[in-house]
Structure formats: structure tokens, C-alpha cells
Image 1 (cartoon, rainbow, N blue to C red):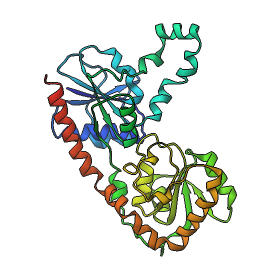
Image 2: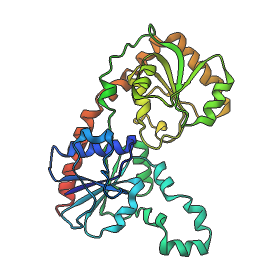
Image 3: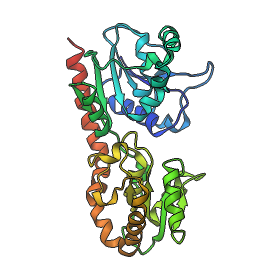
Image 4: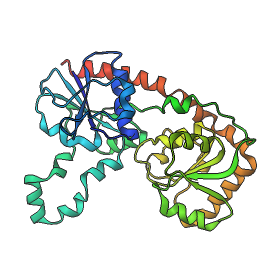
Length: 331
């Protein structure tokens, strides 16, 4: 049996990806289940959004060497509950792993707290032993791949993701006829720096994507020219891809996965370090897009084609990972 660990009732891009893996693995085996943790008794752990994946789930795991458990990087503490099962970590992000550890480094400076936490600390249970060769590492982004290499992991395997059919099925006009000179942004990401850009030039129409339905967000992306994202990119984020597919020109910072062309496959001139000295250049680039959208949108063809083909790539990668499981865990 393959168990995919997922927090109960929690709907994010990451938890959807865990369900997508479950759905695609069912092609190769009927013995795959979502293992929901943190669920309440007498309550279904499945979020309404994920019922389309026809989920079969468990709340307990059989700990033996014939089984496999896949956990996201934020739930590595689960692995310590088992001694015999084969273990795999899927690095959907890097930054969120460190967030799940909390302020461990500062706490470690206190010897008293250190001794207490060694005995009782949940954070210590989350720390990964990167020298353990029995753990199979999967990475969703090239940012995570580099992180694993720096930690001394010699073998890891690519398993990325894909955006939903609700975005891919949209008809998109890649011209400026129905598009406004408008910049979209997520106020939950990089807002401190984004506010500086907004205050630098208040003549630009900046629109926060907040308190909207998915249909409203799709309509805004299809009628706007630019989406900016100067927040952290803990993994290969979905929304830049969704906005790009819907015709927005993407302008990002250089944090996390945004540094890697393989993860955010846009021309380098549209990536800026979030430094105040770059704000005039960012604003000028936005204005350039407003004036020359039809020419610039063609520079995003490779990125959009990659996005359209991601589900096929994901299916191929799932097959490869399935074969790795068969080889590594049949020994």
C-alpha cells in the first residue's frame, strides 16, 4: 500500500497536489490511499474541493516493509512514528520546511530549552536526517533540487505539478484589444515591497486579488496585462503560471524558485531583486508592457507551452517515480 500524507480538510495548492499524485498513481496500483492527519472524529476529512479525485482514505497506517509513505516537507514528523515502512519526502517547498521547524536556530542557543526540546520537542521530530539513504526524496522545483544537493542528498527525483483544467480550458485572447492597463498582485505575498512600487507611481492601476471567487480572478487575468509577484517563492508557485496562461505578463522578484529559469520560465529581464533602487526600472517595465503588450506576450510562448504540457510531464514523472519505488523498495 502507498500512503500519501495530507492534512485533513485543508485546501491549498500543496494539498491539491497531494491529491493529484494520488489520482495519477491509481493508474498503476489500486493500493494507494490518502492518509489524513489532524482530522476530527465523526467528520469527513476530505475537503469539498478534492472530492473530484474520488478519494479513498485511511486514518491509520500499517507499518510494514511492504508499504510506502509519502509525506510533504511540512509533515516530516510523521515519519518518526514508523520503523518498518518505506519512507519518501516530497519537497513541495523549501521555505515551508523551515517554517514548520519554527525558530529552531534561536531556540537552540538556549541550553536549557535545548535539553527540554530534545526530550519533548515536536520541532526536533520534524528535522530531516539528510544522511538517511533509506528516504527517497522527490522535488517539485529546481529550487528544492538545489537545496537537496546542498544538504548532501545524492539521489532525488523530479515530480512537479500542473495547473487545473479550470484554467487550462479557458479561451484566451493574446492581444491588447480586451485588456486594460492594469497590474494584478496578491496582497498576501511580498506586500511590503509591492506597496513601495504602488506608492512610487499612483497613476498605474494596481488591483489586489483578494476576496474574489476563482471565476472573478480568471476574468481579471484575462482582461489585464501584468501580474507582479515579489513575495517568497517557496516552491514552483501555481499562480504565476495560471496568470501567464491567461495572458498576463509576469514580473517577479528573485527569491526562492523565481531565481531558477526551469521553475519560472520567463525572460530574465522581467525578474528584479526587491531592492528600492530597482523600483523605477520595474515601473518602466510595466509601462513598456502597457505600450507593447502584443509584442511582449509572444516572448512568453515557451512558458505558456510548458504550462499547457505540465500534466503530461507530471504523468510521465509519476510513472518514473512508481518504477523507482518498485526498484528501491523491492530489495
